[in-house]
Image (cartoon, rainbow, N blue to C red; front, side, top):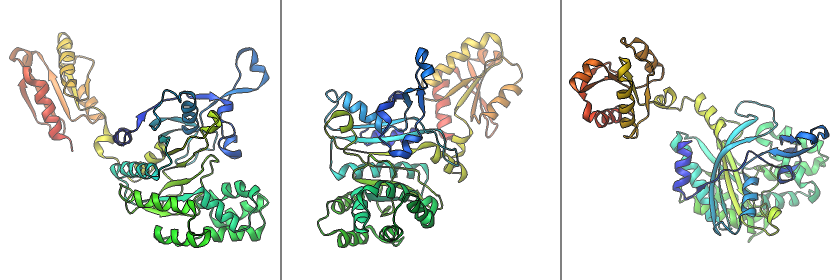
Length: 422
């Protein structure tokens, strides 16, 4: 989370938090029929409890609450507003590998501009995060909702069935072509039309974005605005950390109904599903405000990233082992005050310090505790050390121990810890 926050802030995004719950009217109707079914509703309380009606709901994502905030505080926010938000969301879904009922989303959104620079910068930020976390074999799947509309129209699908088709198509990477075909049939889409639809979204897996864009121009006509928009995004994103990772994936639909333009997901090799996704939603804020405001965002799924990193042993030993740099222990009750004072001085050196709470003339217990927390350095305060004006410092990796002057202990210990750190 520190890596995510650091990158987001370096790209100019400001932090925002919103309540865990919203008025139910705020959330309903923003995610499509399937999304509505996954919203955790909160029943009315007190004298209204017996009605069985709901007036509040746990937030389903962080985007709709952001849209509500922008509409509510429009006069207090800058015209171009960039925010990041890292908070839990809730979905009444069936838990599975990397899928939970409560999970964290790490969002960035930019409000107030239609420029493709927005999408390019967001792709750059997300790719930089994944590279810093150690991901290598990942790609950026990019598509456009208007291109999807154009391809569905070209296949002869009635506009009234576009929503059903997109919901089914969004499951292509999970249930395959046969599964999507069955979904089409269950939703009443003619089999011949369904076959033409699926044919429109097939593409070579290794095709370059420029080749796909040329094919789209041939199908949808030169000058198509959506193709032009994707072309601009690809060109700009190649100047960021997303360089070489983008591919146009015409099967990408993203089921949320509020997307209006470019849509994107992060795909990892040998991993079904995605690590995150997003897109442009220029009409969503208008549902609350009465006039449209351009907006674009991306969301990383924290728990899914952690699951994959854990399964692939991507966490450094220092991070996975513990969160303490130094442990201070004292060998006599009357040394408690000295121990707390020294701990405060070491914390002043920007280190993480734990104090073993009990005096112990033998080091067995504090040593066992420090080892269990993977602490690299232990500082020992005893009567002999105090008499000499020193403290003892033990490197718990090499088991070497020596004494240093008490007056300069904090600085000396900080320098040693930084030499031990990888």
